[in-house]
Amino acid sequence: MPVLVHDLLARTAEITPASPALRHKDACLAFAELSVSVSKQARALSAIGLSRQQRVAVYLPKQIETVTSYLAVSQAGGVFVPVNPVLKAEQVAYILRDCNVRILITSRSRLDGLTSVIATCPDLHTVVVTDAAGEIPAIAGVQVLAWEDFAQREGSAAVPTVIDTDMAAILYTSGSTGKPKGVVLSHRNIVTGAKSVAQYLEIVPEDRILAVLPFSFDYGLNQLTTALLRGACCVLMDYLLPKDVVNALTRYRITGLAAVPPLWAQLAQLQWPASIGEHLRYMTNSGGKMPKATLERIRNSAPNARFFLMYGLTEAFRSTYLPPDQIDRRPDSIGKAIPNAEIVVVREDGMPCAPHEPGELVHRGSLVALGYWNDPEKTAERFRPAPVRPHELPIPEIAVWSGDTVTMDEDGYLYFVGRKDDMIKTSGYRVSPTEVEEVIYSTGLIAEAAVVGVPHPMLGQAILAVVSASHAEARTEDLIEACRQRLPNFMVPASIQVLSSLPRNPNGKIDRKQLAAQFAHLYEESAHD
Image 1 (spheres, rainbow, N blue to C red):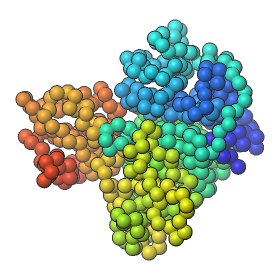
Image 2: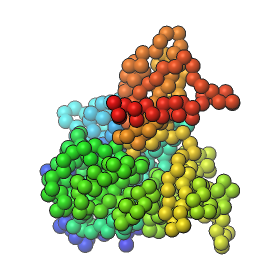
Image 3: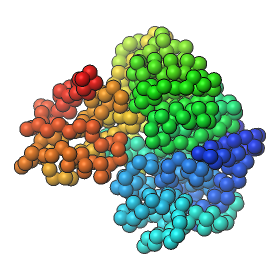
Image 4: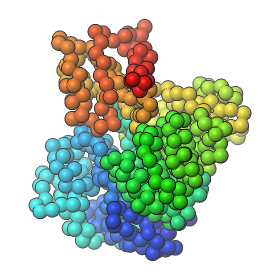
């Protein structure tokens, strides 16, 4: 069985070399072809100086080169860093600096957007451009290579010594203090996650899995890894409109679809061709609570497909799933632990909670990540010794303390209650209020700002900024435009409210809870207009 990320491909290429592995638009690669491309690219990476455990960032939409880059970096002994293609230059530069990226693989248009910040990334020595046409831009101190030139490099074919507990990838997720946190995943984490999900979804070689979520999102990356593990075909797609997704289901005769609540809400408004029921066999949701009405409409659109409700966090990949046969009995549950994981609910003192008693969800097992890159303080907060076990080990086992409050019933099913921190969950993303506030403050147009999440029927939570004006009335459209210029779309506030002053708690801090309560019905009211 595979133990390293690139083994997922190598093993399947030996068993079913001619089976389709990847589809992107009209292009299709068989497993053997994909394996040859990955090996060639791995040697090229060695030739341009990639050393064991060095980081390579991939800043691309979903395309063939994106997948080959992840697997080639792994095979060459490096660590791949998927960068969400919707991020703007400042966010990308932060990631490149934070984890000391040495090589960046991107497109010409994205590189053009990064030229002003590349100089702030001192560890970066090479940029590989996948679609360079004509003259390659020159960047001081950085080697810039066209894909064709890069692919012809021939480094060592020897595979560096890498074991399953070594770093394989770093996925960046928003942190409560403003800057994204790099969650360090081992080969064991990623491979175990593929095995676990493939087991309960019963993925088989005949499956065709539509990958619409970003690969920088652990939930999205798993669409690829489960397909590689089981010899299924992964269909790569970056959609513009929800209708594109429905069309793709039909065009490629998709059998498996994963999405987040906002996308499901949009898909639920569309008419699905009856023919989809002939091939779509499962659907999954993670990244937030699925509204009951949306779930009902989606299930009616594809009545032959089984629907899995799931809960996860990047620090432990996936924690729970609710079997389809339990949805009607327990529609509010996030399910039980996935295979090869244990979920416990504990009080503040670490002791187990009684049934229905709220407590913190703690995840233990081989899916627990290695920590946060370059951040021992936050790692110590989230990655702590597991709750007391009947037979304690001499060296404490490290578990992920999620920060999420849940309850567990007598049958072991879990129910989400809320989060301990101020993170906003919108469109399947975790958004740091501080990061949005920093952009608003930088305009100089306001005296104070607080960003909170409020309930939204489509997004789960909408980002709401509440500000107090300084000398003149702040023009909310100017603040929104500043956010659009510097933040990805999913982080731009849906609304900005201006108050004469912001409420404060007894400690003198801005009272975010009061603001969240004050505007809690903002979008519920508009939904009924």
